[in-house]
Image (tube, rainbow, N blue to C red; front, side, top):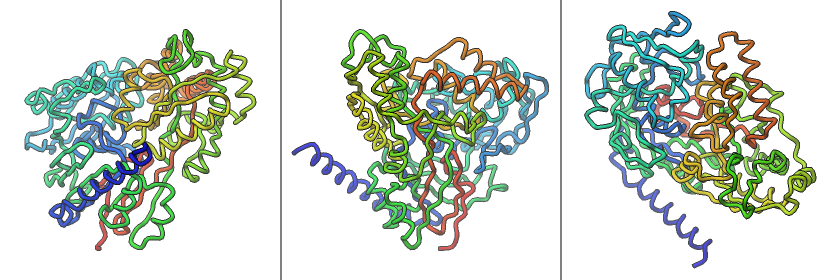
Length: 531
């Protein structure tokens, strides 16, 4: 059997398997107000501090709560903390709700806040950079904490929207007082089990197959957000045709990533609707420009990506308009920086791209000493971003026109992301959203040493500037500092930005779920019409 037939057979097999699973849950789907939903990928873990990845955060948010919440408009609203204020330049006071219970019935208190923030700052936490300014957490009383930062931090409440609270007692009981070492593929109790204060309770978890959650009837937030969702059944479906078939046949009610080529067909289907909004996620390419020799290139004893001319040549060889029109079918906006218009620090001037110019790209390669090009592997996810593998296929063809022979390796995100975190990739595709809606978040993870920066770019002067942005309270000065970092990243061609994504959801017409720019579905705001 040739490779194509093998893949076809495998896809058919997967499709049949997934549809069989969907049909195999009559007891669940017949329950009242069950929402069956799907997208291409699954959460990577249920440990809320192990890895900073949106699908994972979106799943965890249904079980665990944060002190501060970003609503559907990404505006900050009180959540487990009913108020917050600065009491001095480096001390924030958070007053907690006193009516919150863990899902085992025990009370949520300031002790849990101190434990959770300390846990999120641990060595194995992927959120250390996000809240790295926290110096100390002081318990004032059972329902008041002071969070002391190492300098003024005007955006601390924004940074806390994806820092979830865990029960200290439950964590100690199950040996998970430290976050899972995700990069090391550690398996802990918190990876498949969860116990939060959130709107839903985990019922069953079979990674990559199905996750079932039930409404938490004792959730503290029901008075303000009396949602009607009794149960959630999530099924990741990697195959595009199978995802659409599941929606059209009525086996699922909500699809987060309908294939772009099927959107018009879905719109024409009675009982279904499509909603969309601009997303705060940018798709880009990263290059290892620090190693002395690339792992996958035929160039030995040197790293061509260290040469800015080579990086710029690759940038100029990418026809982003063709990718937007043919791969993304218009559902994308070409990007010049790795952040979109909803994030602070974005400007249209910074977002301008380098021109597409194949002849200049060839000249740049020749000037850098590679007139005949070279070979390299491009690592790409195939179940995370909209048409991610197709984007990489298009880039592979475009770079071939300037002599760069790209060996494309497309894998599920469970295999792709560890390559980035473990520095096992020369050239990779990644997407980045900004939950804090501020450029400082982007810089903390992508412009200095961090788990998600596999480029090797790390400039002490830029590090100082990023530190200053984190404590600067003069907003005009802060904006200029942000612009300086963006200009440096652009001037050095540290990343090859591609496009800002558009969120497109398809759902039954009896569902009304506002689409937020972070592409994280918030079922507590869902409305269900009679059907």
